[in-house]
Amino acid sequence: MMDDSNPYLPYTVRIEDAWYETPGDRCIKTFKVNFTDDKVWDTWSHKPGNCAMVGKLGIGESMFCISSSPTEEGYLRFSIMRMGKVTQALHDLEAGDLMTVRGPLGNNFPVEEWEGKRIITVGGGIGQAPLRPVINYIRANKEKYEELIVLYGSRTSSDICFQGELDEFMADQECGCHLSIDVEEEQWPHFVGFVPTLLMEVSPSPENAVAVTCGPPIMIRFVIENLLKLGFKPEQIYTTLENRMKCGIGKCGRCNVGPLYVCKDGPVFSYETLQKIPEAFA
Amino acid sequence: MGEYKFSIEKLPEVVSGLKEYRVYAPVKEEEGEVVRYKLIDENTRMSIGAGEEFSNSNVPPKELMFPETETLFKFHLGEGRMEAPSLDDKRVVLGIRPCDAQACSIVDNLFGWDFADPYYQKRRENTVLVGLACSSPCSNCFCPSLGGGPAEEKYLDAIMFDLGDTLYLRTITEKGEELAGALSGVLESATDAEKSAAEKQAGEALEKIKRSVDTKGIPEKLPSLYDHPMWEQFSDRCLGCGICTFLCPTCHCFDIQDEVECFDARRARMWDSCMFSEYTVHASGHNPRPTRKQRTRNRISHKYSYFPEKFDVIACVGCGRCINYCPVNIDILDILEKTKEARAKEEKTA
Image (cartoon, rainbow over all chains, first blue to last red; front, side, top):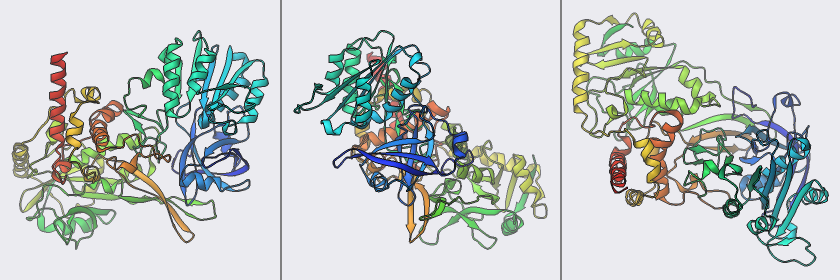
């Protein structure tokens, strides 16, 4: 946990490595960071799904999911899409530079509750960032889960986030990995179409299963619709929400959907909860 | 606890007797008629007693616990060191109205929830609230509907009654009694005469309050009216100025910004308003609450449904400021009344 006496004071982290996952205006850059004060690790503890405020002093901070699993020890990872002022400032940073991290914040995927089940992740675009710690956590604790199926789609083949790791999953016999791109490309050996269509193509059984979907809101909406068609019950479906945030600790007010604060009560919600909140997918 | 009195002429002595504390009191600002709470000394002309009567300050004293802008920490660009301000000063607020004290107790829930907010909490702990019972409530006051009243003591450390030449002071908590102890040279013991005069005044003040709302059932009913046309109707004339939130004693939303001047910088937080479209807009440009209809609905729902769902108390004290200062006369009581009507109608047709 953070400094109990002041949750607004961030930790300082040093970038150990940084690389681009995807090109373009809205490029995604991954940062592998470590605390400048090694002692932070004594009290730091996060779970798949937790977030953190990542920032640069003098510019500000924004909320990002921690895209590394707690099973990856000795560093944290953040994969950040260039979108505005803070993300541009972060993208300007390279290995050796300092950033600030305030966290872990928010709730997490109930990975322990899911033990013994079949886990299906359905990701699109940068939505793979919050799913990555789930996938890596399950792969590190294989014996505790019945099956892992990874579905991922991006606009084009060069927009695939975590390409190397997805290739690894493809090669892994124990993990069912299915990729798709939105538009036909030469030499693309996998599915062509939107993620909700890919989901129907793969058609995973709802039997003893949990489906986790993260991606653009429009994709989430149709994925959930299709999961329901496949027989998944609302309590078997999980997703994450995002909203503008400033404090990250349930005080500044702006991230609410109905009575829930995305920063504190989320970002992870079951569809069972969200279906009752009309503002959830606004 | 103790019952005391002092002559209105001794008010400056009371202030100078509190040298252990920083003293805040309502002060009429020189230009215009704006009353707000300011740091004072014995020479300041404050708006307490002696014909200085006013219904309530324009700006609520929430700014004493949660300033309009405050430094979270200072830092020097290029260095990692961050320095948070110390907030250890003992303070006393003279003349806070019972509704504004009640508002503090409501906002305590939010700032104490899970992650304690050290800035708010330190100020709150170090502050003694000496109230002034209302003798002339404003035409839009409706505090009794929210469990308050013009002489409600529950959320105060001590309460004063303005009896003309004399101020009657009753201490309520240990903090209040400690403060009275520091004033032993100025305070006299109160008699039954002052006590009954205070009671009479409180009763008369309560009778002057004409507006009310029966809040029963509203928190449960509001979510089902999410798609009701009344939201459009009420937000039609809203200018989106945000005054209803800035002057609300329970509104607590804030923004955080880094301010840099050369190499010296600070991270500061400042009041923000859910009535502004920038408040919720994502970096992508997407806005989950793009129109005033959605923002009005969120403001009312937050106060009367979301907040009570989380903290078991409605985030409104009936001070009437949002009604008094709305430039286009949007009236929260009309909205609440419509809520009840709409729901009743729906239940009838169902």
